[in-house]
Length: 264
Ligand SMILES: O=C(O)c1cc(=O)[nH]c(=O)n1[C@@H]1O[C@H](COP(=O)(O)O)[C@@H](O)[C@H]1O
Image (tube, helix red, strand yellow):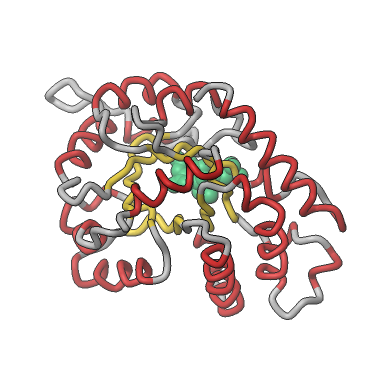
């Protein structure tokens, strides 16, 4: 099944557009799990148990798993999420020359969707785009303070770079598997982009720890048919500390679902 169809089913089934970000910083794993063989996996398993009924998807950020134990933990986490019937979006922000990016795209064999960086142009994304059953979220207007440094620059045509990225992404969407990443910290750009590319679902990070606008994330992040994702990572997985961390994460995921649902 195509990724966005699967996501639409998942959103309808659990009535939630929450993406739970698994940014599992080893330094923040509670002490009682630090002695486990794979602390990140031990942590993620408990987080998934506590949050899966609110999770439209899980978004592990690859940066937190760049070690031998990390990769093992990530693999276990992906399989466990799938066992709960939750899609997995790997936040890898990949792209490179064709020969290299073909290797990066192999990661899609294990997950349902990925984030990619458009800076190197179409051929750097083609192996991802060609996997028509997988979702490809292209960075468009990012949530970080420096997101404006390049993305807001005005081109000769008068349009900002992020708008050109959105137009290109729309053009590259021949398999209906492309989405955009647009931060909740940029609500005006979110609104503008929704009008520009109504057919593209957005992944909207930046609510929670980054203080982004949850109402704008829902109002503009979702497509007319309601498909889209609003991500929180630290605000959910590190909502509590110590032994009850997983129950706190469950409560935080439920609160975010309820808050977002007010605006759907
Ligand atoms: O691609 C992303 O997911 C992403 C894009 C963006 O513009 N801003 C952004 O925060 N993210 C990711 O979303 C997550 C946000 O984490 P929290 O700020 O802890 O909710 C991190 O994994 C970021 O890498």
